[in-house]
Image (cartoon, rainbow, N blue to C red; front, side):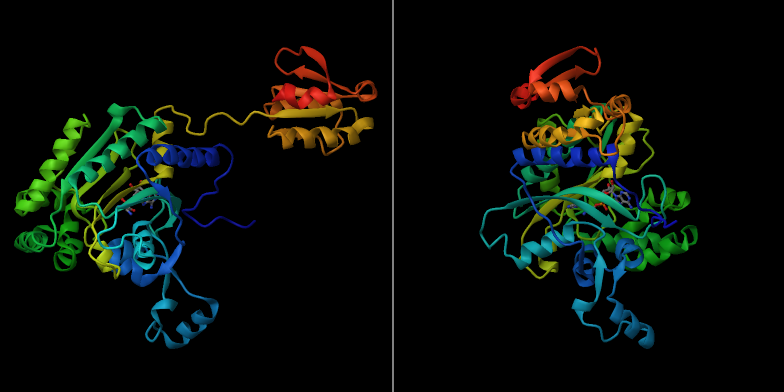
Length: 432
Ligand code: HAM
């Protein structure tokens, strides 16, 4: 039997309805904030991710699925290296949505210099070659937003508020949501802070793992996220980002917090929150669900340098993404059914001798937008009723020779078993 790829899932039935519900809710909540839907390709040039997410991140170095056409694979195997390939031949499945949306914004000039900000949201599959486990997949689904062209700290706060409202609308108990925020500084204060953290790691070299020593050279801030508990203990004494901000970044952070306070959004400041993607500047945030054991259900932040990294004009930006599979798990743990009820339907049952009469009735009901089922396997009337119950039909339209002769249908209420007759030409209006 053919097998699904490890770390991927089939979305169908209630799980699919849950994913659709997440998108419908996003359209409503984000729509009220002025966000429009965008869809960018699931494959992009490797360079788009390397420039944006950062060459030294785990996402780019270890987790990105690279894509080559069949003809190129032969060439690569012969050569043994990617050297000589053009940028347009070096492709990858997107590990996240931000880099692609920003690439699209640059290419289509969404935010001309001096133009109004652009607000976009998206939903779709993302791909990361991580070790699969609960809530960690190789193909997972994100809903995300990107807000381009807004430097104002009010936009950071509104983005966070919108995210928290979205989680509440999906059914999370507000007190179970743990929002952590931090500021990582910008191009003027972060380089000096990175150097300080690097020096700190090197001063504690004998206590740190090999990975952290490597991080000290390529991406020292990632040491705050080391899986090794001892490294994290040591890093608790490291210089912290909020204490190393320039005046502008400190003021921006203070204003974001003021707006969040004004909106009554509770948060904890986590000065070690660094996120796994390099494009962030200033505000970063992440949300976890108390006791769910699935890691972050969403995260994001500001990325004022990303448009330039993707070849555009300097343009501020910010956004977030949430993970469908983790949200589904966390809501399930809180007893919330994200899938909702199965859609209602009407079943048209008949005695086998009048089967042709069913055809026109189902057609008319469906054209009126009523979800309608019927039998296509020559089942007996009794087993058609059983099938109708299985499908959750509240009403059966029953046709037999007497009904057909009289131009009526019998309506059978499937819970009370009460029956009544309705003229066929009134059926659609009645069932609507
Ligand atoms: P991220 O934190 O890497 O941010 O991912 C966002 C969310 O996607 C996570 O909080 C998690 O719920 C989900 N997620 C990530 N990796 C996996 C996985 N392997 N399996 C299941 N779920 C996963 C970003 O992707 C940024 N692009 C967010 C952003 C948008 N920042 C600014 N704009």
